[in-house]
Amino acid sequence: MKWQPVDCHAHSTFSDGQLSVEQVVERAALYGVQPSLADHISRDVARTIDTVDEVAIYLDELERHPVLHSGEFCYHDHLWREIPGHLVRRFNHRVGSLHAVRLPDGTIVRAFSRHIPSGLTADAYMDAHIAYAESFAQEMPVDILAHPTLVAMSFRHVDRDELWTEERETRLVEALYKAGIAFEISNRYQPHDRLVRRAVDRGVRISLGSDGHTREQVADIIRPLAMARALGVRDEDLYDPRRHGSRTDWQGDRR
Image 1 (tube, rainbow, N blue to C red):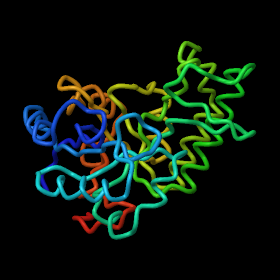
Image 2 (cartoon, helix red, strand yellow):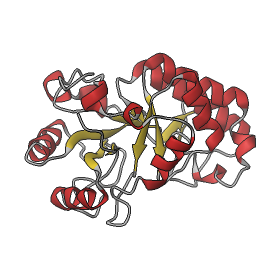
Image 3 (cartoon, rainbow, N blue to C red):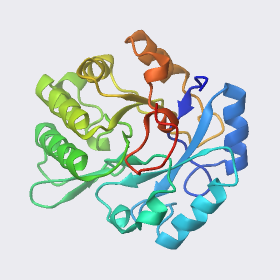
C-alpha cells in the first residue's frame, strides 16, 4: 500500500465541525491527506452524537464516502460503554479523549471550563490527571489518545515543566505503551518535543491529528508530520488503521 499521511482526527457537521463530510473529503484531497472523521460521540459535548441510534446513522453516512470511520469518545462519559459490538466493528479506529478529569473525591474538572474546585492546585490537578490517564489506558478500548497535553483551562498558563514533570511524562507514556494506544501529535494542542520524544523512544506509536473543526484546520497536519519526522519516526510507522489494525477488530490490511 502506497504511503499517504492520515489525518486521524477531524470533525464535521455531525458534531461541532463546520464542514460537511463531502467538504472534509475535498479539503483533505487538497493536502494530499487521507481523511478520517472522528466526530464527538458523547453526552457531555455541546454539539455531538449522543445516542446509539445516531451512531448508526453517522456510520451509514461515512460509509458513503472515501473517508476512514472514527469517533472521538470522552472517557468520563459512559456512552462509549453502550455502543454494541456490531457498531463498534464498523469503526476503522477510535479516538479517546480526556475532556475531563475525575479527582479522587469524585469531582469532575472539565478541560473547557474555567470552574475548578476552590483550592485545587496545579500539582494536585496534574496528579489526578495522570492517574486518570492511566485508568483510561487500562480500561478504554481506543486506538489513539487525542491531544495528550490538553489540560483544564485554569492551568494552561502554568509553566510546562511544572505541569509535565519527568515522572508524569513517564507514567503517561508507559500507560499508552502497555495498552497499545497511539500518542497523537495534535495540530491544535501541540505537545512539546520532549514528551513526544519520550513516547517515540519507548516505542509508542505516533498518530497525526488536525483536530480540525474549520475549513482552515481540517486536514492540516503539516506541523505534526514535521515534528514526527524530526524525531525520527518513519512515515510508514505513523498510525494508520489500514496498516496497523485497530482495537475495534476492524478487518483491514494489517501489515
